[in-house]
Length: 165
Image (tube, rainbow, N blue to C red; front, side, top):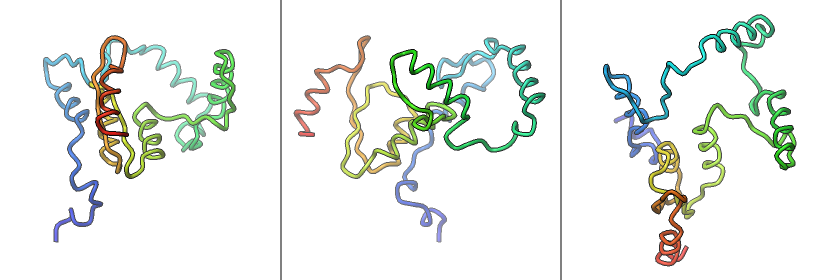
């Protein structure tokens, strides 16, 4: 009996991550990658990162390597509440969730929202991780083109009319 039979059906047909494949190519000698969101390492603020690391280790060593709160650092969430307030957005820190990046945020959001029969419409091109996350849900994915102004509304309208969503 193969191990694949022990996996959920949605996982058995899962394609390799396009992002992972892009990252493989970005590490090849002589390649300057413009894909996968890989910044040039020359842009990293080495001194600033070293200083921040030193500060954390000197002032918060006991917490530095421990698991944090699921919803994210309390002080950071409080600061974000103040930032939101300055921008005219009323919220509370208990309504904010800090993620490790856009992909984690999208994964949590899509898993919380996607049900059987739902249709997600994405702009072409779209973030590859979004497509992979959506492929793990029972939702259907449609796409419409985009231009310098965003999603092409006429294509969206035609899609909605043709499929009676």
